[in-house]
Image (cartoon, rainbow, N blue to C red; front, side, top):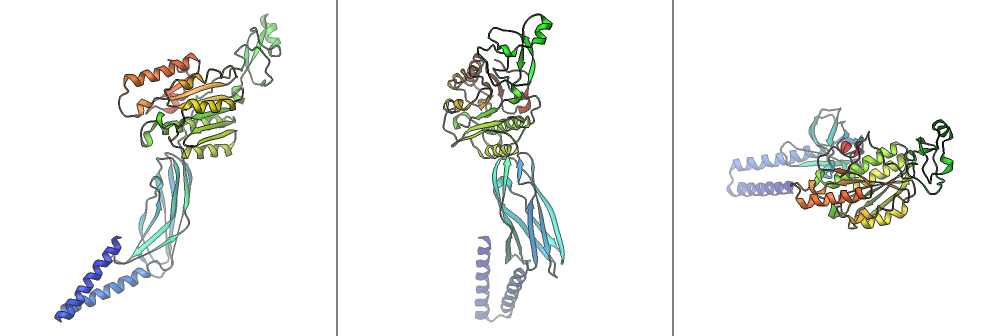
Length: 410
C-alpha cells in the first residue's frame, strides 16, 4: 500500500513537471523532466534484474520442539550473476509465536551467504512458517522485485517438560498392604517385602521362609506400581482456570500433565489421558515413543475452553479405569462434588493422586479469605477420603511442588 502511494506521488510529480515544462518552456524544467524519466527507467531496470540468477532456500532444524527451547533455521542465498547484489531482504511470514528474524544482506558476484536464524519459543501450539520471501529493489526505493521459494513448514511447540526425579505414584490399594477378602489373580512377581499375616490375606501370598524364621505367618507385599498404568485427567473447564499468557494456570496444568506423562512413560508404563477441552479428548492406555508424540501433540494445542464440570468428566472416566491403575487429576476446581466421586476408587483397587492448582494465585492479586477457605475445604475433603494430593501455586518450582517425597496434608 505504501509503495502504491509512493508511485502515485511520483506519477503526480512527473505529470506536473511535464505540464509545467511545456507550458513555460523553461529549460531547467525540461532538464528535471528528462532526469526524472531517466531515474525512473533506470531504477525499474535495476530492480527488474535484481533477483536474476539468485537462488535461495531455508531449512528448519527442529520443527518439533518444546517451550523454552530455541527454534533454529538455516538460510542460504546464492548469487550466480556476474554482478553483485547491493541488498537482498529475506524473511518468512509466520504466526507471531514462531516468527524467525529476517535479514538484509549484500552478496558479491558468484558467491553464497548462509546464516543461522534463532528464536526462543515461549508459547506452545502449532504454527506455520510460510515460504521464504526474497526481495530487492533500486537504490532510490522506487521499485522492488520479490520472489517466494520453498514451501510452508509446520512447527509444533510442545509444552515444557520438567524432570521429576523424585516423582512416585501412590501405591495401589492391592499391592499387599491392604487386607483382602478375596484372591486376586493379577498377582505380580515384583515383591517389595514381607509383613505379618492379617486376617483376609490370600494363602498363596504367605512367605514360608520368613514365617519359619519369625515363628509366625508372614505374607509377601507386591509392588504393583512398576506395572501399573497411569490415567491422567486434565481438567480444562474454562471456569476453573485464571491468568493470561504464559503465566496462566492452564499453562501450568499442561506442563504438569506433560511432565508426569513423560516421567511415567520413561518407566515403561502405559499412560492414558482425558483432556476436557471444548471437545473431550481421550487417549487409551499405551506406551512407547509413539504414545509420547501423541500426548505431546494433544497437550501442545489444548486450551482452557471446556464447558463440562470436572464431576461429569470424572463420572465418564471412572468406568474405564481398571484394577491396579492410578488416576492422576490435574485441576484448579474447588467444587467439592468431584471429590466424592473418588470415594469408590480404593474399593476397586485404583489409586488416585490430585494435582491441585491454586487458582487464586494466578489472578494477580492477593487471595481473599473466600478463596483460601474454598481451597482448604477441597484439601480437607481429599484428606477425608485419604487421597494424596499436591498444591501448585503460581511461580512454584513444579518439580519440587509435585515431585517431593512427602505427602501433602492439610
